[in-house]
Length: 131
Image (cartoon, rainbow, N blue to C red; front, side, top):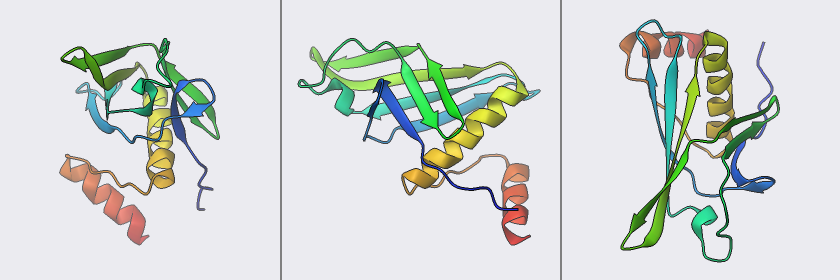
């Protein structure tokens, strides 16, 4: 049964979607239970002079609700804000699965795809698409 595809967004200010799509990198522990997703936003709208304010976190919002991380850092070049880096950490398999559902919705909402480095994961994904 196909799951309904909803929209997903990332926000640095509640209620204001960030239009810049980040580079996202995942790392997981060997047992797969814990891990991190690192988001890098180059020249995000949240750092624009007209919107610049105190960034209290990064909210990942979709039809299931929201996830939040407070681990957000700015990068500066010659004293000028140039990027934001946020890290979302999960500590259970359920949290990881929830994050991946968000990531799929976010990719679908922004016309993106994603790749996995492990060959077994790629094989499983290809098999599911053919079924």
